[in-house]
Amino acid sequence: MSINEHSIHSLTDGSRKDGRYGAVSSTSPTRKNLEEAVDLALDESIKGEYLGSYFKERRDEIKAMILEEYEEARILRIIAGDAKEEGREEGIAEGKAEGLAEAQAEAEAKDLKRFQKLAAAGMDIPTIANLMEVPEETVRKALKKADPQETQ
Image (cartoon, rainbow, N blue to C red):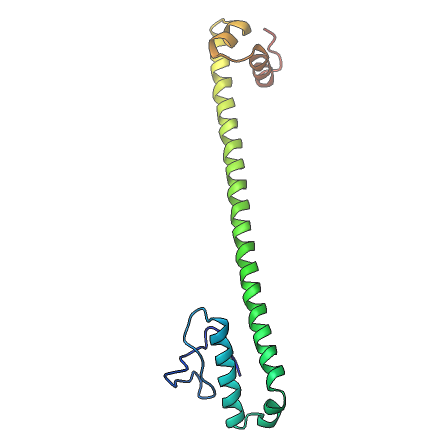
């Protein structure tokens, strides 16, 4: 016997998924509909003599077990969905951080080229810093990093 949201058909139209039981129509069954489907499946199993005496004796236990398993599966789907969303958010954050790092590296490379062109044109570090509106130390570190022999 299998009862799940994919095997559920209408209780009122009498249809059966596999000829063994009926179920409730819904892509997201309510607890009441699910209980009705479980009851119907148990009734059909007892009538069809699928373990009839066992089901009669333990009907409430079986029903509780089926409903508990369904609820557990539903909770696991919710947790999985939350984990997927959390992973997506982390991925977006990592992508943004990588993009920001790349943009900063590109900006630093462009600034270095400008600093080098201005230095090659004969400007000293204080003049370059003033013109580019950056601290002198920024210009000095960039030029030294690009050419360790640079000592302006």
